[in-house]
Length: 442
Image 1: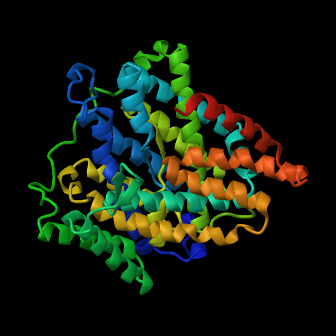
Image 2: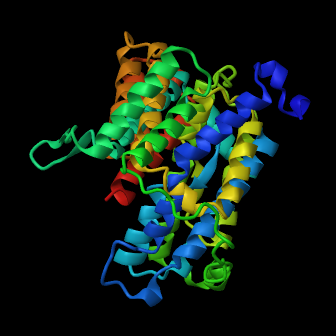
Image 3: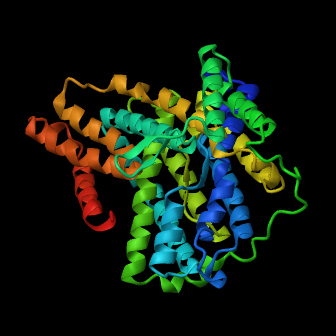
């Protein structure tokens, strides 16, 4: 096992990789609770129950699709990158496709399935890998730093340190509230662990913060630790197949293209950012990129069959990398934990947003180190890099941030007289991103 995952080459161990896998799992375990709520439209009170997805089935589908994706990523691609149904895409699935457009969830799942199959085809032809490798190094660094700011912003929101403000969009929250104080405690504690160089400091911070939350009554102590059986998949399993004939409409074409576009560039950004953070990039290229992309595509197909929205690579994997994860063994550990979670669902209720918020904030600190590798004195590079970085958190979208930067890159490079340095694929992406803003962004 050590030889297969090259522990010696990466200077790691079973303990380090296991802590990394557990840290990643804890940082993204919220999806097991959030995804069923999103896809079942639980917050929509007057929606007919007959048209909702079954929460229990979605929970099981979420755990299993995440486990499948993590196993393929860990064993085949050998990266410490975990997968699960993606936030953002699940909201688009539930609130836009099903609720607003009135498309049945079964047909929406068929759309996810088709998008996953197209991704597999693009991956097998090598096109996805070529696109990722054609992106200039400076923009890859910008993507990593932008995601760092984005994930830190999410962390501050989850902690309610930063809240919505009608006058100025966002502002400082109530720092005296219990959950916010718990998150601040966790942040200070995790910072101390990291400064002291304690391996697995992010993980220990999550565990101790959760324990303190229960001690002070901010987190409900679960009545049960283990449930007898996982919820049944029967309500959702295979529903996509029965509705493949319903996807041949202009409306569904737009839906499938949105699934394709957002997943493609969210995944590309996540893979590049996490690989950069882990020091796994070689000569501005992602080794075994095809295998990593195949894992992502396979997970999407598996998730659609099981009964969940698009499954994709998770930026929370950077928490595991920060805890020392460097190999696919960390992803295997995360996969096993997702499988175990099928029976330990009551225990997951203690991993609340204030508990994981400090991990997200610290991960952002680690990821913005990529800013130092960007040539800021070259204005033709600085503009697209800056736009990539700043638009991500402001638009709340990795894909939109990438789009903004990638549109300006060929413009500034051509005006500087450096057109020959632009990879032909970047011109194609310029056109695609312009069309993205015209047709897909609401």
